[in-house]
Length: 146
Image (cartoon, one colour):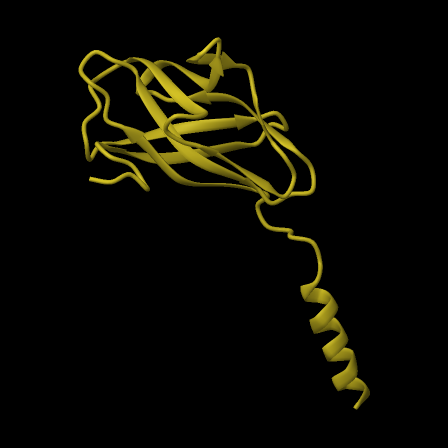
């Protein structure tokens, strides 16, 4: 009987411990197929399952000479886009990079990106963590109508 109680205590309290897996998860990544000779926009969701905030501080890809983090803001009665040095992801939260909002800009593409292509991006976080993400190129992205 003592063995059963001990097993149940370990099972119950062992399952209640803090998440110890990978604290940074990237999902729903895609790149919109750009018009000819134009930069491309990338979208994804970053989940921070950890107990500390993290900051996305750099993005790189072989597909573009430069990749930047951009935010969209409504200012002086118009929508503007500006580059930011980092993107904060609070502990236990997620940040969605999506059309019309925060996104990644792939500048000076080394070759045209077409629907069906796949591009690898390396996301670098302020704590030194890196994530490699395969991003499909699509004419329309997730949650967009045909």
